[in-house]
Image (cartoon, rainbow, N blue to C red):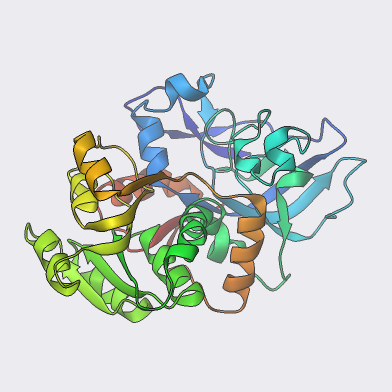
Length: 341
């Protein structure tokens, strides 16, 4: 089969012919990929930022946002069968450790991460686990939902955590209306009554944000922190969701947060420099966020299949993976890029 393989850091992956995966264990599932999302994390992988944390053996197949159809199942699999349409939680988990039993399966002590730790889904087939499979309506096209598998549940997970803070009368600022941010805006609109302000430097992204539920949009042109302060009566936002968190956005996000407010860091790549006195004297919270749980993905798919969350996508053939990565890196993709084998 064809697969998008990374042979070395700081170089683009290439298309290789590799053997198709097969079922090895009782709970294994092989999925025929119908859509694989292209994520900024893939750019960070290529840069080597995940090498120490994941220690993958090069070369390997990248791709951690995957959906498709069940192709083969192990003898103990009961929740899906061959032919089912599925979206895959990005981290197959054990179900037995304390984190899994507490419903925090993204922190599973025994999880793997296809696309980061070993072969992922930018290929024609992917080996995963029954525990990762969320069954979908058979009419769903995998390419339309694939990016919800990671970008979607990352955005949803952050919004879900912030819901108790976003009662009517509050304000939430979203920094970045791109691949993750445009999903986060829709989740906020569907699940809360907060006033949504979106900050981005791209006019097209801000136009989309307005269509998705933002009450105000602000161009990130150097005066955006003051603009947010003006829109919030000088106090800042109750919650800031930072889907960028690099190139200075991480400093702006904290500055936009009101006293006793919460700054949620979702994007990554930058470094937060905040005097501890500024934290304790204003009681502002800094909240880390990673990929969501299996239940987060199931809930998000309920929103998606009811039409309350939709992905804005641009599709590429699998062979055009390098082009898709280049377009994403250069900011030419509005929403999400999807590879379709």
